[in-house]
Structure formats: structure tokens, C-alpha cells
Image 1 (cartoon, rainbow, N blue to C red):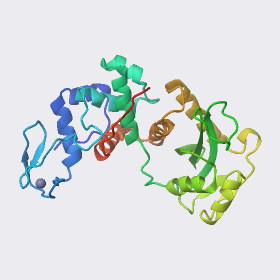
Image 2: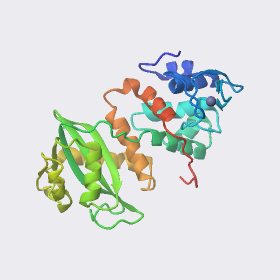
Image 3: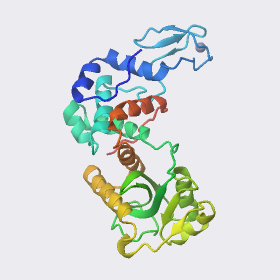
Image 4: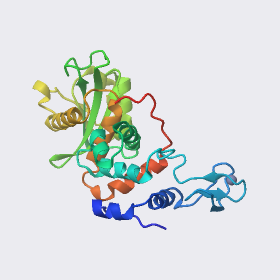
Length: 296
Ligand SMILES: [Zn+2]
């Protein structure tokens, strides 16, 4: 079995994943390292399949490749380069544009863009680790004039609810979700997915939060202050997020995927060591995704 990598410099990465076989065996390890089960008949015995790295069920002969049913499913370009994309997206502090990936890897920009979109799918929050301590929640508008918060949506403007966890003097975690309306239902669903009901949550006095006081027993609603001055940490995080998005991506299409990418890296900035492994495991555990109608 392959070893797991604690931290991976670019040099180590290049040495470790220099051939397609290296990549296939790592995918096989991530996929079947804790046991194989046939998708068709449930049998747990295999022999090697005809294609490199694939396993064949000894009972029904179903053959599965290490990339099948993962986000690497039917990758049409060099698998080594696909690994590089995951590496650069996970380890670059601010992420990487498809144009830059294209230049580094000698791939078409559209190819990089489409695969990077798949990597971003794997960066979606699992919702498994709700904030239990001190949290703040607010909404903001992305795109357009960035005014008219809580107004109706149009294609160039998206309403986003943002939640942070505060620890000591800083922000230790960040979640963000595109919502249609700032009503109690949308706000409540976001909060229930990311914040424990006993957490110390602070929001402003927007009416959408009022009904949530019964679910979140320690919810405090305070005036937001001039330009959100009572929520300085949250507004700083939102400003950084908007600045990143402007540099990375020039409109608000696919905004949720970009929010997921940003939050994923933000939430792991204190434990970068395992970020590549973690993202690879998520890629393997995520169902295939077909990026249709490609337009960047
Ligand atoms: Zn079988």
C-alpha cells in the first residue's frame, strides 16, 4: 500500500507522481485502501483487470478502474497533469486561474477550466463540523453595484450569507452560501448546516433572523452599525473574499463553486500539511461530475 504524505513540496510531488502508473496506484489506494466491494454484486474478492490499475470482481467479472465513479472519471487528458491541477489548486495560497494552469501544464485553457471546476466540486463543505463556539452571520451582495442588500436578485448580482467562527482575536472558519432571499428559511437552513444550535451566534437586527431565536438559543441580534462597524471581522473576511474573487473570476456565474473553493482553503489554512491528500480523497469519494456547456 502507498504511504500517505504528510506534506508535499512541488519537488516531492513531481518525484512521486511522475507517471500515469503512479497516479493510478494512488487513486487505487484512496479508493480501495480500506477494502474493495464490487459495485454490481457486492463481492469483496478481486483479480487484476485488463486495464492498468483496474480490479475485476471474481464473481461477476465486473471491472472497475481506479478513476471510475470519482471526479477523475473519464478524464480525457494526461492523468499526471490532472494531479498537477489538484496540487496547484490545493497548495497555492490564493488558488490558481485556468489561464495560469494552461500555461504551466501546456493544456488548453478550457480543459484546465473544466477540470478545475470538478476540483472545486470536491471543495464543497461537508457540513460535518458545525461551529460550536462564537459565530457571526450576515449577508452581502456580490457583483453589480454591491448595494441593495436583501433586494431582488438579477443575473449580475447574487445575495450571499456568510458565517464565521471567531477564535481569540481572529477568524478561524468561514462558510458562505448563495441564497435567493434573505428570509428566515434560507438563513436558517444555512445556519443549521454550519452552526451548532447552542453556539454563541450574533447577527444584525434584520427581521429574517428573528424567528431563528427559537432554534439558536444563544442568538444575539445587535445593530449592524454604520457600514457594518459592529461586525468588523466578518466584514474584513468578506472584503478579502470579494477581492480574491475579482482577481480570479470576473463575474458571479458559478459563484457557489468559487465560494466553496475559497472557504475550503481558508478553513484549512492552519493545517496545510494534509491539504493535497484531503482534496484527493474528496475527489475519489465524490461522484463523477459532467461539466456541460463549457463557458468560462
Ligand atoms: Zn461482482
